[in-house]
Length: 484
Image 1 (cartoon, rainbow, N blue to C red):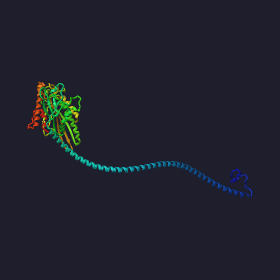
Image 2: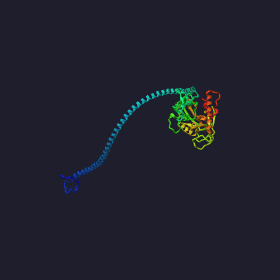
Image 3: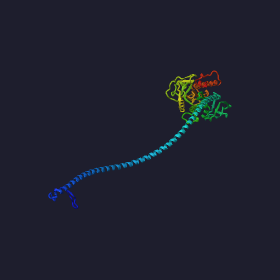
Image 4: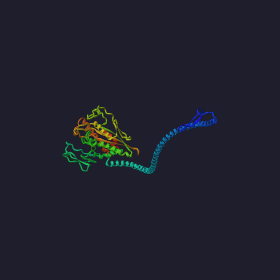
């Protein structure tokens, strides 16, 4: 092969010498020229091989560089992505750093507040300790005062009882009712200004004066009367046995005084009778004594003594005709039945010195219960018309409240009894015009009232024998009349 140089604007190429038509192997200089060209050809071929190898290497390098370039581009993209992520992380890091600074500031503030709270807590603990010491001292003082109050209550009960005894264990009050339209004013009772005596003026006769522990004028209300006897109710709450009687002729206002206006009529507390006012006072006083450790339970019974026979007024079924005997009116029209056997039993050693068997004893948890009992009793009580009173009570009614008190602090236990008795109206036979059954009723009424007078006279004179057994009424009340 030979290299043919190109002319201007032509590239050189390598050709085989045999192809050159100008070449000739003949001549004198032919061998030397062939060797020269062969040497050149050999060199050029060797150079061509080297160039090929170098080209191949360069191509390999180009491929490698292209691969590296691709990798670089990939790395550049990754780097760009990493830069973006790094920027985001920096932003997040800055955000968290700011939050951390804020949290640290909050923590510092919280620590300061906590320190302040600890100081406050320590101060409060010191105050609590001081208050506990003061409380302990106050509790000791309260305990001492409780002892003083308890002793004072005991002294108060004793002094109260002494005052009642000084006033008189047996007291007689006189209440003058207003004159009725058909009554003559000239024969009315006149109350003296001293408040303890009255003059009875009868037509054609000189006035007669009578002395009492207290006199209530016609203007007095039931509340005025109760103010005078309220201390006796307090004595019953203190554990004593008390009797309060409403005594007088028929039509004098005994039932009104004891029970108040007739059921169904408008009334105020000023007009409430002795029974509802006594119950109200018992509940009010019991409530006031609760802080001193006292608790009270009340129960009641309501009896009628008619012709020397006892009947339970809280029994809603009327008695048989044998019991009524006289045919006295009873408002309840239910089926009649024979009365249960009722007996009076006395046992001074028992909790209640007098027990009446066969009658209902109703728990009283509120004052309204007593109003219901009064309504029931009013329906069952025997009454009849006489010349002296159109609605004359023909029996004695005995409303009894049993008051049981307990004090867990002092281990005291009391049992008081309050008897409120509405006596049957006393009548003169000639004036009442009673005949037949009415006559028998009047005789029983006057006899039992006479027996009550004998018992009270014997008690006031402290005679050795007290005739309790002479009537059912005095025998029933023996434990209260003859006790404390």
